[in-house]
Image (cartoon, rainbow, N blue to C red; front, top):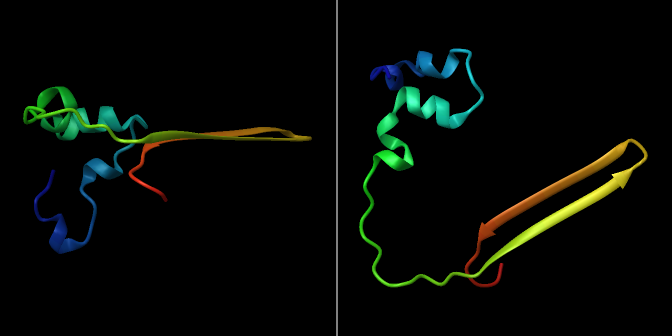
Length: 78
């Protein structure tokens, strides 16, 4: 990507080029070294036990159904 875009305040051309809506496709074209399979991670030391949860909400109405879900890691009360 262009290095001088910060001084002009404009997005690099890669962000304005039509293409796939897939972030993974964009990343593989622009910064393939950032893909999960292309970087090395430090070794894990000890098991990590973190609470997690899933939220699912559904609502029906005369025109159809709306369904939403969210799964994220949480730590403590929120």
